[in-house]
Image (tube, rainbow, N blue to C red; front, side):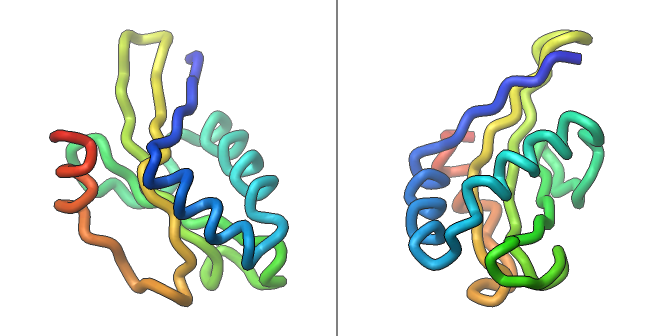
Length: 109
């Protein structure tokens, strides 16, 4: 399967804010992309193509449990091509969860 990745404007803003706090976060996201390619079923299925994935923020010196969370949205074009959109990112220590209805509205779903 071929994967392509995109980010939303909201994700970019959230990532920029987190990058000021955690220097490693951009490389951590690249590692997460590779991890998704290797195991696309990881994380928790939220329904409707959304998935919540835990990831470690290296700068925090803690594991996935205390790290960040990324909400993705999957679009399957055919059996060989899939687009994964990074919709939201947050530090678990700042937010326990995120409102999926707000995410759906921001994507126009």
